[in-house]
Length: 440
Image (cartoon, rainbow, N blue to C red; front, top):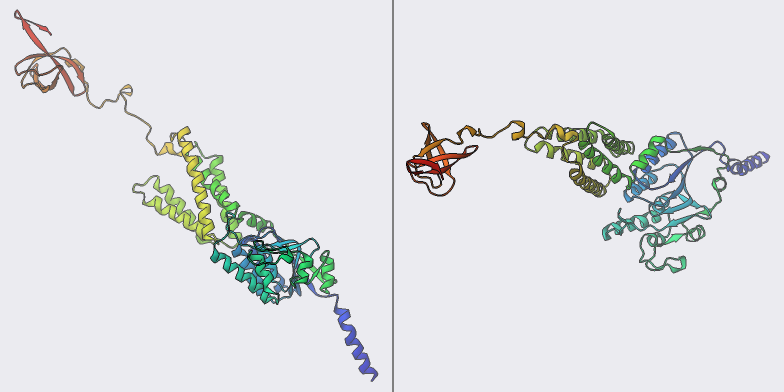
């Protein structure tokens, strides 16, 4: 009996001994700033590392204003496939796509000043998305809430302004944003904690080994370079720099800036897992064909080169619509600047000077289109045919095509050459007076 009581007491004390998580490992992964594909790539790397290293729990520290729907969907799918218990700790805000990400974790804790919600879907230009996109997003929010055992009406209210919840400050026409106390009340948060230490106490992991993950320098750069606002800026700098270089002698700062912007664009998209080497090959091929077009007739090489460059950009994008818009912005900026450069600098400078013929064949440089026979001026002769006003006359046994200075001159009339202009020879009729010829 005493042995049984001892064993029973040991089992009763065991949860208390292990409640602090001693010997367990907790990975803390930040979900911060704009939600984009760079963040998705970072979270895929860190969660994979956590699982491979035998993590017992993952805490996602969320502080984001939202971002791209496609990136949020990728992150949500990643969280849904996790075999490790996980918690979203909203340290400041989990808005828009951030709330959707938080809803796909096992449980949610919030700081006292944190907020979650305001998840209406908008286009990249700030306007409301079409009804089809809104309906799909609302369904995703509802499904995430239901999968976590939460009342879906609040998730719907976060994404649909037509849901009327005035008791939570979200009357009809407004998106729902929950503070920590309201989130606990409606079952969207398990608790409110001041900091990570208190959260670990709530999770019975206060003595666990903490592994803090953070983005590498390359991942931080990739996240910046794949930001939806940065992409059209990079493409504009790239196209504008290369065009300006064509108007500038030598290879200088504009060309370097253009190439650097292009390199940064593809570097960011490769690190973020958006672009592969096939996109780089297409880009190099396209640039080569465009350069070849400067020396080949027909235009086929140039058109093929432009198509290859656009295809390489499209292959590097997760959102064809946004990439098309970014390319359009870059083309507009480049065209406007090109017109200004053409009017102010012309095409005589820079690379164009090698492919544009600038020399002219002028008389001042010794070029003449026809011999100008000035030695004929003053010669006298006789018309062979009538001049009406053009015809033929003979001068020192040489027949010449001539034009009369005035009107009609009959055949066998005496004429005198008064002007030569290339092949045009002008004659004037002579009259006989007292057997003496004098010029009229």
